[in-house]
Amino acid sequence: MIEVLLALLLLFALIGLGSPIHVALGVSALAIFLSDALPTTAAVHTVINGVNSFPLIAIPFFIFAGQIMNAAEITDRIFNLARAIVGWVPGGLGHVNVGSSVIFAGMSGAAVADAGGLGAIEVKAMRDAGYDRGFAVGVTAASSTIGPIVPPSLPLIIYGVMAEVSIGALFAAGIVPGFMMAISLMVMVFWYAKRRRYPVDASFDWGRLWQATKAAALPMISPVLIVGGIVSGAFTPTEAAVAAVVYTLFLGLCVYRTLNLDVISSVALETVKTTASVLMIVASAALFAWALTANQVAEQLASVFLEVSENKIAVLLMIMLVVFIIGLFMETIAAITILVPLLLPVANQVGIDPVFLGVIVVLNLMIGLLTPPVGMVLYVLAKVADTPFEECAKATAPFLIPLLIVLALLVCFPSIVLWLPSLLY
Image (cartoon, helix red, strand yellow):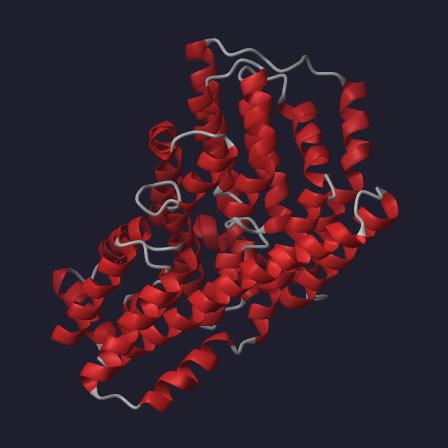
């Protein structure tokens, strides 16, 4: 156990020094292997098996689909549709920001993709309309976290692989919490708008709504294709990801003609880079998790939790505290691949449903994306909005409140999460 504690200290020290997360995880895991004299062949097999999973193939395709939508200017159509639907409410563009994220969430499945793609459009539009830069950045950052909760979700795919849980059930479980997040953020935006007297974007107009709906009708088929195909059993998540890519390429090349081979090549290269970084994290995190498992850390953690309390809610709150602390310092995918082998046995002992656990763990980690020191969404928006990182963190802090309230409601009422999966599966 001493070796594990030293490895954890090494891990956080390397992260603090700015080391890439996969390097920090790999070095720390190897330190455990060497100190325990574990066979190096086991390390090699663990790294290979960590990425040798069919559902993981969905990740590059969903990333590619999201990148194509940005390159094909489909995100502009989504933004205009949201603008026509909710732009008339006080604080209109703030609501448009949240609404756009809900729609885009059904296509990309990643918070960073939302912040980097829609974020640039949303922040510029809000600044041009006279909104405070801090408010624009804060609501953009918070709304981007809806993406990994509403299907398709890359973190939920990783969780499903690690926990051996139905990814379709996880996707269904994320729908209601995702809409709860959107509603809570809109309430927050409305409160800010009334307090600061933010304007409406434009009065509601049926003609404008009809034109925006026609312009965005074909892109809106994409989330229906993905979610409907998975829930109905027509597609596996991987097949749905491939279908999403084919459909978005069809829109960009044949319908809107906003894509060409040079753009597709650039997008493909960016997708390869992003996928490689994700899979390197998955592989190194799998090695680290295996080393922790070999030292029976999961069993010791379970005994510690159960000594404190055997009450399901108490254990769940302890799990959430651990996840929240890890989320402050670690990237989402790495955190999932390390935490699942440790926390799932604890959850199973007290009867916590693994599908429910997956949704609240991912939501908890999404909050971590909005908090220093490793808030990836904050770094992306700092670049997109040309705003100092510290200012982004300060502006986003108030919007953590509605997200934490939603998390608390889900923890107290698991049926909110499990109702739809139990209905469909």
